[in-house]
Length: 397
Image (cartoon, rainbow, N blue to C red; front, side, top):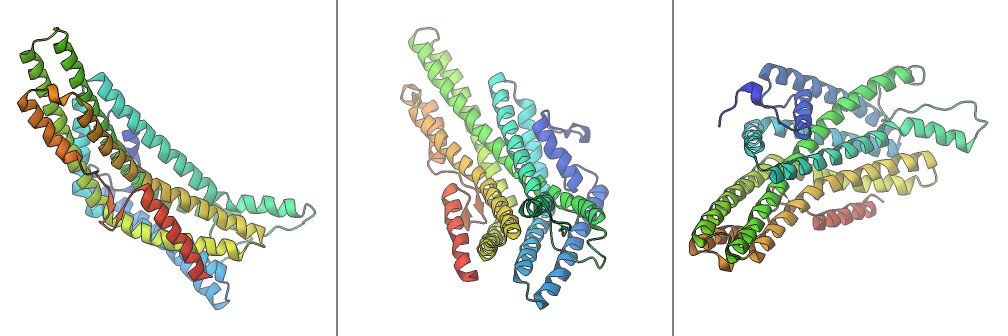
C-alpha cells in the first residue's frame, strides 16, 4: 500500500504526538528536508552554546579547585553529548524509521477488528502517558532548583535580607548573573526546554515503538485464543470440521504474518536505538556514581544535598524508562509462547499444527532489545548497572 505525503498522519493522538515532537526536533522523515536541516542546525547550535557556557565555567572552577562544580558541569556536558548522539543516530537511521512508520501506519489503517483496535489504542495511550509523566517530573526536578534553593534558604533563616540567586546550571556568560538573573533564567529555560525536547522526542519514539510491538504481541495472543473458541464450536456441532479448519488456518496464517512483522520491528529497534543506548548507559553509570559522590560529599550543605539528590532521582527515573520497554518486550514474547502452548493445538489439523509450530519455535527464545548486543534492556540489567553506579562512589571517594 502506498500513501501520499498528506496521508502520513497516524489516526490516533498518541502517535500524532510523536509526529509533532519529531517535526519540532527536525527529524520527522516525511517532513521537508530543508526544514528538517534548518531545525537540526538550530538545535545543534543551541546544544553547542550550552556546551561552551558550561565548559568555560568548568575550567574556571577547576582552577579554583571547586570540585563539586567541576563534577556537576561534567555531568551536564555528558548529558548534552548523549543528546547529540541521539540526534546523530536519528539522522543516520532516517530511512529505517520511515519504513517502520509506514508499516505502523499500514497496521493501524488495516485493522478493522474492534478488539484489536482497542488494544492498539490502549498500548499507545499508556506509552504517551508514561513519557508525559516522565517529562513533567524531569522538568520539575531540573527547573525547580533555583526556586527550591530560595525557599530552603528562607526556611533556614527567616530574617535573611539577601538571597544569592542560582541558575539551574553553572554557566559563564561574562555578565553579572545576579543583576540579570531573571533574564538569564528565562533564556536558559527556553534553551534547556529545546534540549529536553530532543531527549523526550527520542524517548517517546522509542517507547511508542516498543508499545506498538507489545500491542502486536497481545493481538497475536487474541488470535490464537480465538482458535480454542472455534474448536469448541466444532465439538458442540455448531461448525463442520472442514469449515472450522479453514477458519483456523486463516487465523493462524494472520497470526504468523503479524509475528514475522513483530520480529522485523524488533530488529529495527535494535539497529536504530542500540548504539545510542550503549553510549547513554555507559555515561549514565558514570553520572550515577558522580551524583552519589556529590551527595555524600555535600551532606552537610542542605542546598547542595537537595540539588544533587534531585539529579540522582532524575537519573534513576531515566534509567527505569530505558529498561522498562525492554522488559515488556521480553514479557510479551514469553506470554505469547505460553499462549501457543496452552491452546488446543492437538485438536487441529496437520497443516494447522505445522503452521502453529513455526510460530512456537520462533517464540521459544525471548525477544530482546539490546544496547548494541552489549547489554540486554531488562530489569535484571537495570539492577546490575545500578550496583555498578554505586561502585563508582568508592572510586570517586
